Amino acid sequence: MNTQTDDHLDDDAFEPIELGSVSEETRGGFNQGAEFAVGPNSRLIPIG
Amino acid sequence: MKSGISQSLPADQYPPGSWQYYLRAGQKCLAAGRSEAALPPLLAANRLRPGHAPVQQSLGAAFLRTGAPDLALAWFDQLLSLNPVDGRALHGRGLALHALMDRPAALAAFRQSVDCHPDAWQSWGSLADITPDEDERIGAIQCAADARLRLCGSGQNRPRNFADCAKALLDARRGHEAVAFIRRNAAKFEDAWAAHDQLARAFYETGNYHAALKHKRSALSLGQHDFSGSPLPPPFSPDAAARALCGIAEILDAAGLRYFLAAGTLLGVHRSGAPLVHDRDIDVGVLADESGGPDLARVIREHSGLLLDRRARPGDRYFALTFQAIAVDIFLYEPCDGGLQCGLGRLAGDVAWRFTSFNVRAADFQGRQWPIPDDPERYLTETYGPRWRTPDTGFASVLSSPALFEVDPYVRAYYALSRAHTCRLTGDPAKARALLRQSPVHLDLPGQYEAFPSTDNDAEDA
Image 1 (cartoon, rainbow over the protein chains, first blue to last red):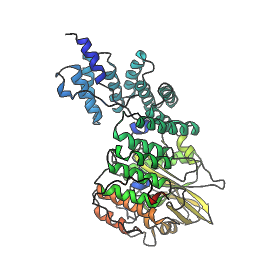
Image 2: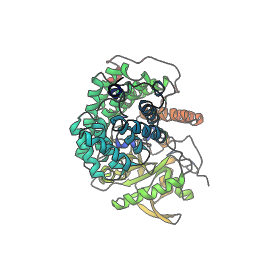
Image 3: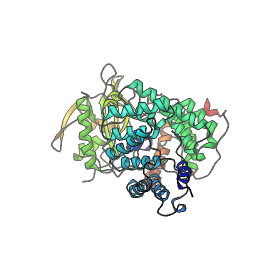
Image 4: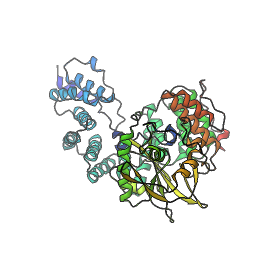
């Protein structure tokens, strides 16, 4: 069996992992903005 | 770059011990966000099949995501030594260089990537993320949106690409085009929820708040969807927030800005000298000067430690950042009719607050001088009402602040519904109900299913 040929066939099957952009890869997007905010402007008394 | 859809078999369908078995296992770990666990099988695959491009690229990705950008860079450079125009390797090289804090070299890698591969939306997005040049940033945002559109038109894409394309169009501030795109392709989205949710955002961006609310309600009627795959923010830590606040203060000081602690952050430090335990973020105000400045977008864009959101533009008055894993909201307070006004957007009817004019003075909190409004209790009263000292976890200044100024009722309802949904997802139904009660438009978190409206002639377009 020609294993090298088999390997080349498999090359096409293993498409590499796709990396995201800088902001996606650095997980810099926790602040999803005002729409998702549930705490910042709540009228809370601090604890401690 | 191709779409990245692997047609390979599951790892357990390759002979155990084969390089294919290890590569598939490593890629599966990477896709699941388990980058540390991906390394042993990928290294095993590389021992069995040295020089195999997908193995090397996966190793580069795994090292990048495990905080070893120097090792990642070595793998990407090895790929480029064999193929100097390898798009994924060029992009990975840019990411590794950025992680190594070499912004000029990272920019060069991303520019080379898009020169070779004009549809490399990840590299266009990265250019937009880190370039200090506003013209290049805007051009990159537009090119990323165009690349996404081409990808969606190619017929070789995943349903997720359509939501991403809609978002890219909104990043490019092409709201009307986004509305048309979503309607045209609604059936190709992952599900009707995703289409409705993106349509809600697109209508909001165009100032059609009634239609935005309608589609937000439709989206939420379709189930318990989460944050579209985005990671939930880590639990809020007042200590970490205080450290982040010091870091942000250094940046704002260096830029010569007149800033002050605002909203919930001021409430926390004014009462106890520290950020609120139950807060979510840091709120900072910046006083505008007579000429409309400062250019907050430039300050953020040019600082290597900050990422300017792609939707942000010079002239905006609200900037949402993440700094040291802490959410930071920066508001520009501008003179207006003898008072000061800040807000989220600049379209008529969007959220805005108006305050009695004030200056900034220094106050001592925990041994450090912090700038605050010169009459902090008046500011807090205007923000939260006369009972600002009383706990009210359901209160939201975006909904019920006495300082709200000419806000469209559908905008307030949109935020009430969005935030109530977030509260429900995070296990706080009491606050969800409290938020819904503050809506000027009757709302309920819908539970019924409904079909996606396919007509292009809805009254909402008016």
